Image (tube, rainbow, N blue to C red; front, side):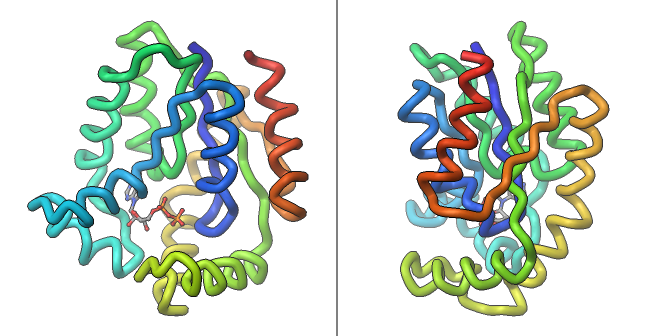
Length: 191
Ligand code: ADP
């Protein structure tokens, strides 16, 4: 198995690119954001508890997403590897993922980081709100909070991965196809 983190601030295009990459390279795409939204859509107790946190642009508790990911790792079959999208989002989640993978004789092979400047991010999220109807994209204050939370809690993971030789920056500005080619070129080195 070859396992990748796709990384970058909200609006950097992780979700869009992950769906395409997963298809091309037969990877299991695991998006904690999508899993949480599915819980909300299904009206589960967990979904109800998480939705107010998400609508403020805060992070849900580490244990919640760690448990979701563990269950998916154990139920995945016939894939070349995992593509983690929107997880991990804290250093504690990163350490938990490392432990989960090593207990199953796996590891993270590379961290693909999409670089997109702040103004472009805000522009994309506002546009996405019109198309996707995601409540956390509608309010500019919530968008700014998500970017702040990313900087404070999530960005430190880059240094953690850089120290371990996993960091691969990718220019996240351009057409969807251009960025897909850049990411595919990096993934090809591993598969
Ligand atoms: P985006 O990258 O556009 O912010 P996501 O779909 O990845 O969107 O996440 C949406 C929201 O779900 C986050 O703002 C957060 O509230 C919650 N969330 C998703 N993944 C995690 C995670 N790994 N840890 C904590 N909260 C998460």
